[in-house]
Image 1 (spheres, one colour):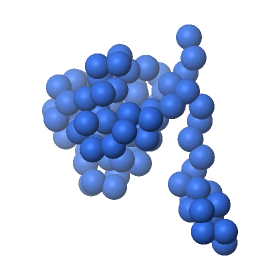
Image 2 (image 1 turned 180 degrees about the vertical axis):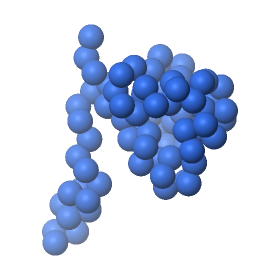
Image 3 (image 1 turned 45 degrees about the vertical axis):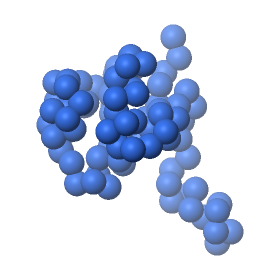
Length: 81
């Protein structure tokens, strides 16, 4: 099974949320959020969709089969700096 990469820690940090606060909002144990962030656990489709809906982003912005480009590199690429 392929590893599912995610940007959960970035999305949480942008909103100033703790793992516990996110977990309570999406109905899982706070340890589950930690496992997801570390890549120790891949979310079910239902959980991935709940997380994406909570953050108001498309699911592919939060989860991907390939590693995400670091946001700093993405900004440089987009601005041509």
